[in-house]
Length: 167
Image 1 (cartoon, rainbow, N blue to C red):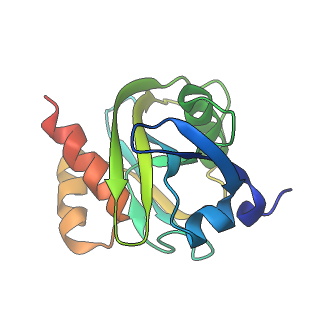
Image 2: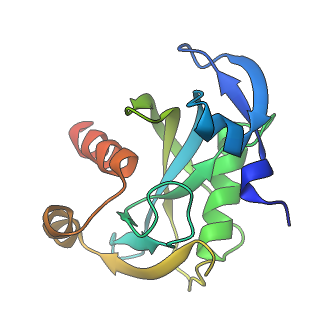
């Protein structure tokens, strides 16, 4: 298995056009703009898959998230990355995702394009233990309550705000 620091990512400009490639560790260290996917997964009751990230994660270790996802590999499309990331993190096969919107997330130390998707999964999940410490299926009201009490990843918090505002 490749070390996440060595995973090759596309570096993009402010218009999401590829301008080069670099290993993830270098992308983070040099604060280069890159791409990620975020998938909001709902079950048959429309509850949302919420999880706490592993303390070993490079970005926001131990924080909660309402999205599964991750970086888009070099040469990979957003759609391909969304399916790959959802299947890896949930421990499932055969999921399909629907793209919703994209935005540029910028913080002092980070900058990336977030391609937000939604998926429905009604079967069991076996979350990737290297990525996820805890998980549960929460209603929107429960998510709203937890957002005020738990630490959430900043890009996920912003993506969820935009997700709710899009109607």
